[in-house]
Length: 348
Image 1 (spheres, rainbow, N blue to C red):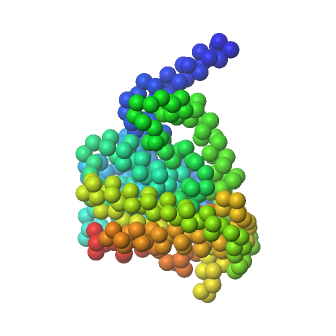
Image 2 (spheres, one colour):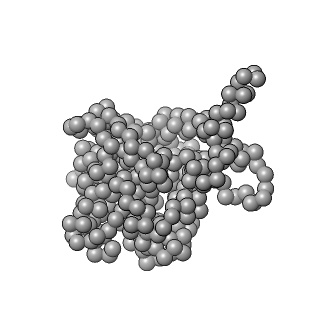
Image 3 (tube, rainbow, N blue to C red):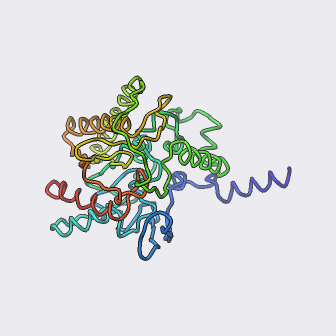
């Protein structure tokens, strides 16, 4: 037991944040890496290896200096794009298309797996202020998927620092969540399990040809919790808008498309497989209507605050654009980046 405790203490001092003062270190964001992933088990690509990089400050992609970034894209795993090459992400495509249209705009990527608008709000306190000479003119929030889940349970990785404690109050859980590597490992394993087996939003290959579809939703009472969730979601959107404007930046909102439903000859076809929304079973058709409600709240908040709001057309996508229900292939990111460039180039 003594050897075990000494080993834990050494690990905590070496890998935890007890001795670190940089807030970015405490966010558990991957930083200062150049990785290579084999994506052959996820989608077809030749060669099958992709580059994934993040700079010293945790920003993904082409490594513009922070002072050079004009537009920052913010989102969850569909913005992080873990298994898409640096040069093939939708934000890389967006930047190239804008340059081709004569817009000399540099784009940075602050996507982090699992983050919802709760996590994006915390970025403005614990991440962005610690990046030197960093003042984007535009924040593009690519959102929807993670906020669909966020009010169903508390997800601690979305709030790396809990902000509902008084500054000088003591909480053992708060102390451990900020500093302990052991606490963090347990937390990551737990939420990886929940993400993969409960919410089923982990990266994986799905053969859409093998799925059963339906045109009828279950409509089993989920509306009772949806209204409350939408109210919370709108409050978070308003907070993000306020935070952007306080920095003198313009917020842009883009809603996430998914592939657990599709539009076929004008008809909504949802994946027939049952998932849970809180305590209520739903299928892909129900998910379509829930997300449509969320997207309408996003567009309402944008319009009310004179911001740009974009919902990509539901019939724009094909099976080949996604490798699972939520994450795009390079064909999908090319389509999304090109579409956003057409929508935004006159306003940027």
